[in-house]
Image (cartoon, rainbow, N blue to C red; front, top):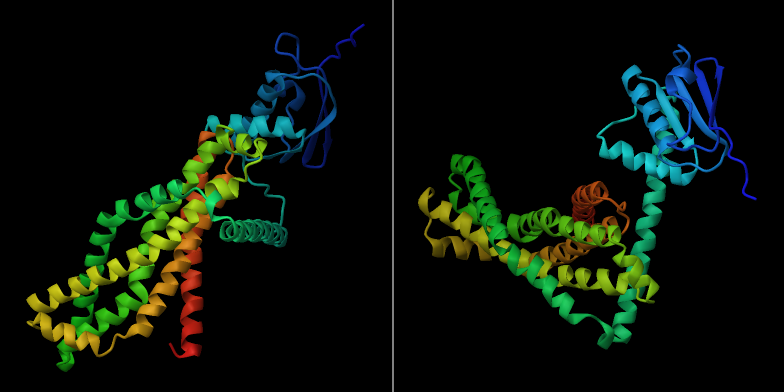
Length: 373
């Protein structure tokens, strides 16, 4: 014989400003169930703690009840804590709240120190995930060196085209305009001292050592990093990554390494192309505004720019490319299995990549100054 159906119950206990609601019994959309207005009974708590107290069979009826609680909390400014509920209920409720574009207020009962502690722990978890993912990619690269025949070269070449050749128009426009802007800015100061010719030195050093790699990295972070995160996030939502792992294929080897190698190769090439376009932009301003001949501009630039400056820019470009690939692929693999999760992953990939690029650039500035480069 089957177990008898237990009546759906929501038992509320008020302790100070907190109302604890224990859910129990079998919840079915076709049978009577508690209503939030009846459970609340006119009380106005500042916090509602929802927990499982023998929750049996349940369907969408329990989600509708919890959603009603969250709606009430959003309107009144209270905080609804659903962390003690079963993981499946909590996950479905989160998707339901996201699809209805609702927001639950933050827990205002926590103090500043507690918030800082939780934020620190969350950052620690994210850093451990990033370090673990970086380790997996490093091991995958070692396997690639040992067995290059198993690498998906066709996918890598396709990604090179997407993140390299297809990015030339936007990189060309931005690099040329950066050179023009730097030339105009430098001319404001240099013309006061009769040093118009030194605009060539300013543009050459700025583009080769700094702006070429940096601006190309920012452009690819918004273009390619977001594309990587969206593609892998969509594959995760469609369970394609799970299918690969079921077949015994490593997602890192199959999906991540071709993208990392493509960015690692194309990023320095794009950066050198951006350097050339930036120098041409500065040359155009120098020729039209400062009346400096192109030959004089070029000769003066070569007196200050040498191979060490080109090496500095190339090292930065390779590092920035790997950072963009790692951030995009990691956010895509960690994305939630929903359309909203894919969007959040793309946004997070861009923000994380740009942040790490700026941090890495600052570290390089200090390191190269110590090394005398």
